[in-house]
Length: 247
Image (cartoon, rainbow, N blue to C red):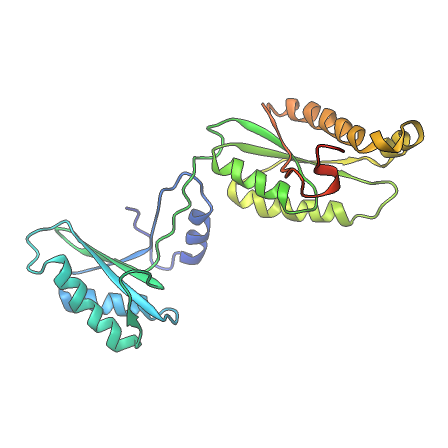
């Protein structure tokens, strides 16, 4: 349990912990006295922060000397929340689950439970992701982060023959993914001249294969500089023409 100071930036703290892989679950709770009225008031306050259609009360009574059983606390506090909010009770799939922890010296009430899960970033090693402007490669990178890998990024663009759109998109994607690993490296590689050379020297049927081969070679060289042990591409077989066995 971590106690926060008065005026702590609770929303920011929650947002950061929610994007920290390796945290099994967490919730922000309010401490109350071991009094049912105080517990009910805290539950009503937690439930009233945002509109909800349904709720459930989940009590864990670590202090068995507390005069009410967990089901009795659920019923009493649940009725207070129902009267205050008008929301219905749903024990199977509630929109909000309000948790009550009854300990020997205090009770804790919370209405948000986040489960980032996964493994702490870096414990599984380093990888390099070939990042396009689509959705597959950033999703693949995110999944590898979730399994404890630190991911570096390589983006190939058509410069000097294209504008900055793809480069800006890559930086935007990396900025978003960096929330999950705190810091990232992004290599932006101009690929237009290499493509032009391949077009000039290679039959059309082999060009896509050579484009990808050159990208992999460059990404592997950059990845080795950062200690990467593997490459991530996010390719999905059969999704588009460049991701089929015939190409």
